[in-house]
Image (cartoon, rainbow, N blue to C red):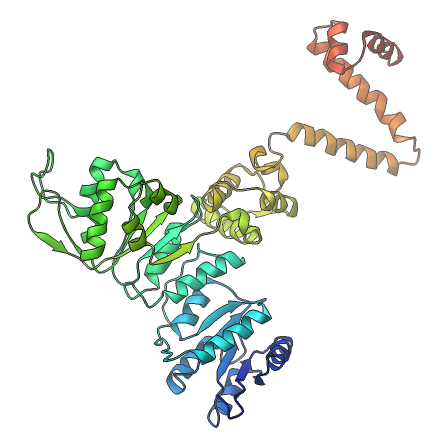
Length: 468
């Protein structure tokens, strides 16, 4: 910290407006500032003096923010760095944390939050930056989003990138809990080892014990050979247990013992098996309530809930829907080996306002469905199923109204114009009367009822329109 006891904060960003906003906010918070347009300029300056905290953008001309982090991790390992960027994705978040960033913030950021983070960064003691493992991080292209709720998920994954902590992922069905688990694994020290996933609710309770822990030959009828369970398969890596809230009390007890002691017995076995497994669990249930109601062990809940990540439902991140639709439309086109189709603005608006009770999983299936049923290269409201708020199934109605609109345009463009109602109404009424009579097999009383008229009105219309 500077001799005047004021924090000195340096800002690196090629956007002059961002530099101006940060400089003004920092000075109002009684901090000294210095700004740089390029990372190279900061490296030159830092040879002679050093700030208390650095704020840097990611994407800049020349030396970008992540490369700058790598350089600073060697030359100034105790300098806390806050990364801000408009290009918000999982890869950037993880790379920033692995590169030693103190915090990662998406633009647009809250200025007060930045000020608080700067103070928090300056107060930190014994900050140890990460190593330079920013290369070759596995991509998770399906885990995408720019909404604040998804940015919090990305930040959580980034913070856990160097750990093997047990994590509990919560969220509604279809929100991508397994994708988060895979991202946690692929950005962890266990990335080179196995990722083993098991949906505990998809397996009968009497078989789940053998599935998890394996069994010895002869342990039960049909066990004619030793079987390695999921825990052993995941040794050294990660075991993802989905729908953990549905596990039976007996298995909850066994799982608790494995988490506490890192060893277990195969079904029918006499020798304990030691494993080194990171457990990531997921549930769409309210586990605290399940604990209160006695359906889930409280000690197991606390053992699993070391770190928690909540995956937001799609209706809480509507701004991500166009991004997700474009991504999965491309995926579906590759899967079906057809040209990529696009959605027009009306179709996009319909899908963005839909509630998506099945979340991202439902959206993925919808993109496949639309790629199959839409006849052209551009998907319109007519191609979106009615249950999603679209007009599919209302084609005949849409077609005749479009035809009527075309006729009206032509009529108004002709040299001999007549009032549209006078020209159109007789033909409209003739058509409806013919259809109603045909439907009623000529019975005028019934036809009038179908038309919403009285019998005398129908008789008068038939005479005036020469339909006798």
